[in-house]
Image 1 (spheres, helix red, strand yellow):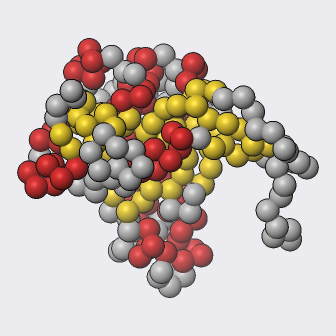
Image 2 (cartoon, one colour; image 1 turned 90 degrees about the vertical axis):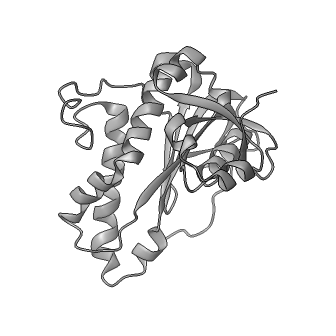
Image 3 (tube, helix red, strand yellow; image 1 turned 90 degrees about the horizontal axis):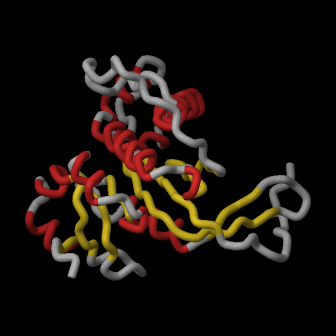
Length: 237
């Protein structure tokens, strides 16, 4: 088995605007440190990735309200790159592949998944008889220029870019919300209002001062005032 990191080609690609989605599973380390982990972790992860992929590929999102399940999800454009990250994953779309409506649909589907995560855990528990499964899934979504790195002797590729770091920071910025989107996605205010999101300013992201972000209105309003004041401000001026 080759354990060395392969060399990259000497030049990265030209920049391309992309949409980045990162997620992680809160409590995954505790879940991982249990007996017979080899039997349970792959099965559990398969259920999680199946649910996220369903948000993209379309179909019956079983975690939704029964009244909504009568209308299955329509497929969305496929990402150009995906990667497993140990306790979560990364999905990258070419920004131009998504319309503004498809972008807000993707955001809303992932928010619904995050807020009904217990139903996904219920499905997982049918084949994973472990109590301490992750209790929450957290998402960070951003947009910006990415650069593709190609390996010298294979077709594999990696991506780098400012927006990947931003998505990672958003994912863990406010544990009480756990779902934050950068306003760099440029979703219209009309669509944000239609799906009950709002823009606020994140004031304490390491390396990203005063970043305008999109959050669910109810998630934000239900925050403890002390947490709200330490992490956000509502004025965009």
